[in-house]
Length: 98
Image (cartoon, rainbow, N blue to C red; front, top):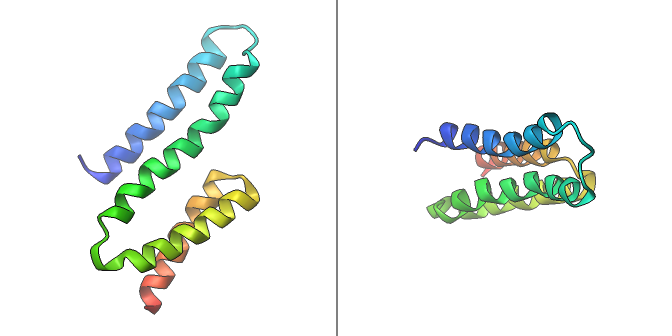
């Protein structure tokens, strides 16, 4: 399976429970499910990152440094998009510099 297809499918898997729970029921969402939905993006992030780190071969130090930067941004701003963006930018820059 291609990486792009994997990312698209993970997005669909993340989106469908949120959409179904909020749109189809017409009722108030219980607090348990609201808390659950908040952790879905944080579960998807490592699912996408860990296989890339493990299969890096000689590029492990660059990938680990980019992962650390992404994790720090993610924990600081609590925004998945910021963690992904900073991690990819750090990876590309470190790869060019090292």
